[in-house]
Image (cartoon, rainbow, N blue to C red):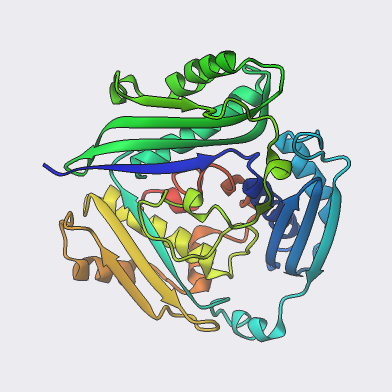
Length: 369
């Protein structure tokens, strides 16, 4: 009997890195609302009441980057530079140029916007075909934000993290061994009140009771205090939560970040496409888990390589599955963009709680192979 323990984490939208991802994707969406052909590669950095936005944008759209940034920070819920950041008073520095003409040479003819390797993954552990630990961690983070924004727990602030440790038996989730929730809060609340509220209104409302028992460890704000948070407590940077964004470390990652990049960047588009394919291989009953790798060269349309692994769970051979993939899907940048409808302003909705497993995303739809 094979037993092992695996842990994944998630973060709330108030985490400094996610503030940056959110600003970058909001800028991308604003460009695409006016110009479907916009080329965007924007990164954001936040620190003590300061936001720095840099990158390349080539577009006909007329956008106000500073206004977008302030509105995004306000929507997250940050309004206090003494404990995190204030959308009204924070300093915003913008350093944006146009896309390099050397890169445009290849992209303009339909080639990849960069070289690189990308992965897609799916398994049958949850209804969204995601690994159990990251799925539960995302649900906890989402609930943590929900009880803050609805006022159900009125003393919470936006920054927060969750972590779920799962015990596996014969490659199936058996029980949750540990849960960790760290949440920013206002200074006046007693730690025991906070811990009881988080346990009842966040953990118990999300985690299935049959997956916990008396030996499940629950940790809530282990230091006893989390008042200073957001960009004041820690710097943030676009693209620094790539494991949170994907599969919680349960599957491989090519290394490229998603947020702030338009669909000509295969870091994002190919990862979305491979998730779609892997999910449908599992959903169609061809395997219980599936991981796919692809590689591209800058300026080239066709991928250099494709690799698939079903970890011994496949009902078809890897060679048969590769043939299905090549026959069914156009894996050129242009083909993937058209198939997944990636020229639309959809990216802000992907920023938080993972890019995969959300029902409304085009790459999450289930088709017949």
